[in-house]
Length: 468
Image (cartoon, rainbow, N blue to C red; front, side, top):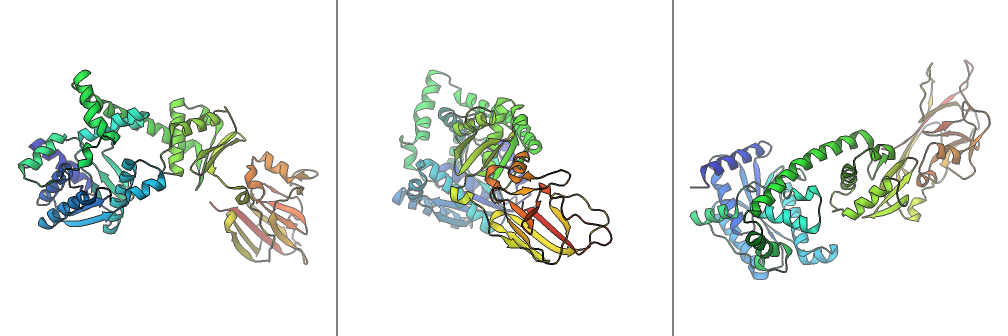
């Protein structure tokens, strides 16, 4: 006997669909009744669906001999049923001090990191936890009490990725009572975690104080009401997420350590989508960080044209509003922002990368094509004997005589017209012939040294492009 037939069929169907991508299951087993019921059910299922089963126990190092007892219980059960066993030690209290998190948050983070590390050694895996309906109720209520948006009200997702692996809360639709009955019927050994009764932990207070109070004084079916709220929130959240991602694909420039968007397109979004957009962009830049509502709202106000044009949003990132766009990028110190480089003399053939400043420079002798294709990143010119071809950083006072214009123009004005951010200008490369500016890559070419007719001299080709 396992679970009731309807439940058993549902679980088998769900797991089978996930195992199409992986034949290795990593079971996260604490030693409590819920996870031991899960491990026993999985090992029984191996008789019907072939897969490799690994029991992973994470020892948090905070409960002394009780934690050692739990680890030994899981190991002995695994040996009995010929299940591969992995024991991972983490130091929650040490990490909590470093990251200034709650014990609960630190333990959870280290637990998932450990599960991913174990799975990485086996290949691409399905990682299964024993979360159930009561966990979902407590999570939705916990998020609500902390102050959350609709994304937090959806609670625990049943499936998500963890690195290259699938994280699956297979038992999320089952009740705690279902799992308790399972271990009783099958005589599955388990350990009671005494910290589950410790009301210094907020989740335990919700479980033992708040939910019983709400059931007794407000709504006997409050659990079902909270689960329904989570389900509706998840469906609406998925739709709004799709709309926001479509906007980002069409309107946002994503780079390695920065994102930018035009103020006009952003202002056309509903306020709710503006917040979602900013939150997704912040998560793109730093996926491991939990961004606060206040950080998101400060950026939204700046992008809406309110408040300061620059701010620090935390976690090493700044936000800047200029030239009709807002940009979120990694903050740099004053010293790091000075990116001028030493002048480089270009030979006929040169190829190098200004690695720190992410520019690729290529020079070579060439036969010019009959018809030149206009490019902002390439320049062709006649090179005369004795020419000094130098690449250096922009200097205050530099001027160029632009092709198609009379007279000269300050490069500082060229940068302003092209809306080049101020922090990029000081290290911007400039190509000179005999101290005369010939070319500013991506922006402007001088009207001098254009290719002449049939009697032209040797042709030099130079390409200077930013590395993406």
